[in-house]
Length: 73
Ligand SMILES: [Zn+2]
Image (cartoon, rainbow, N blue to C red; front, side, top):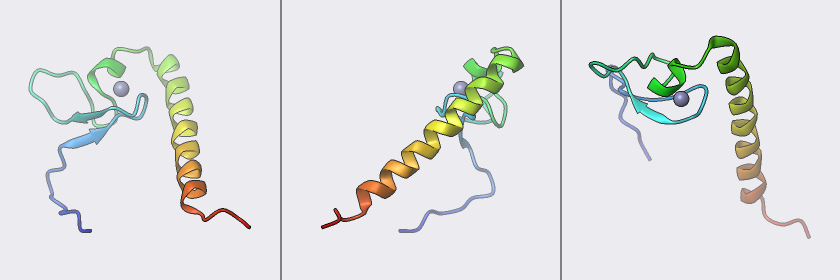
């Protein structure tokens, strides 16, 4: 299980919607942290999305941890 690390990391995860996107892409408005769609969202609204996304990510991690644990007997 080894992930090759390259200096030019092109695939990124959007902070607001967790979508995987390529960066940089010519002609695309996407930034390092936000995909093309979320860049168009007003910053105030995007902040809320980021907060929700953080919670979803935490819940996903928690769920994974719970699923990995053998059932208590
Ligand atoms: Zn996005």
